Length: 423
Image (cartoon, rainbow, N blue to C red; front, side):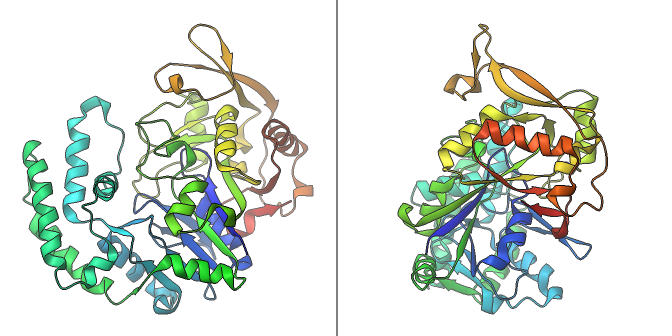
């Protein structure tokens, strides 16, 4: 059996959590492979909205195994709150949630470092969520981080203190206050005791054992491909590998074991934080798009930047991920537009037109070149099949398929599970 991968193709917030929840009945295992509590996966069913930050989005399906892989950075405090918040749903966490001992732990001083680094950048800040993600991945690459398995060791506190002392040296350089650290540490160590009661495993063996016995595994990504540490709009990126290759390193699965790659994208574009965004709208269309799509961060609450769909960026993400199927999300947000624009190329400052993301695009102001198509300009309420779509929406899907050369197998026209239309 091969492992399928589901990931975002834009700058995150594409609706991955909803799709995992919809696809989950076809799988035995859902596994998160990167990111941390900076992710916010929103699911909505039975009239209730749920936001998950670190727990895989298959957790609401009682017959599924959910695995947090080694590529994730985990905040024990956030994880405890998340689990306690879900207790009312009678989820058997002791039976269907498993955490890699090789996952890296976010400690309180990581959050302080995150704030210190961001403050020092002034108006060049990258828009960090201040959850401690970047500093934790820094420590991981620097080979000084703490991992989940360390909490079971008798010298865990000594290891913790040694890392904190390193952080304090850096924080003193930035003249960053430490008054809140004692209270943060108290909450942290309480959460560590709770953490010890969970299923801590060698997850790479568990994932591969599932595949060996024929179980279906779905790898769930966080953030989006254009925020990848290597291939995103650096330095305005996240600190992990958000693409298909990250599923291999973040779960311990060989590249030859990858099956379908589901690429999730919005029918338009959004971005949170700083960084290039060629199709960003600063007019009434952009404001209407934000309101209609309720485009505010599920983790931070920050208003998202909005713009028309960007095909050069999508083609790039499809290429580096090896996408085999596309899922278009939030098609209903475009209900309000009489005409819809599709960016097909960029015009560079020297007048050259390109349809690729080159290195220089990060540092240049580019002009999007648009194709305009007719909108459907009507509500999609009550629509339950693709055949019932307005012809203009079908045409929009066809144009995108023709341009992207990958089939669009799913179109979401609302936040609820039932508003997900399979083709």
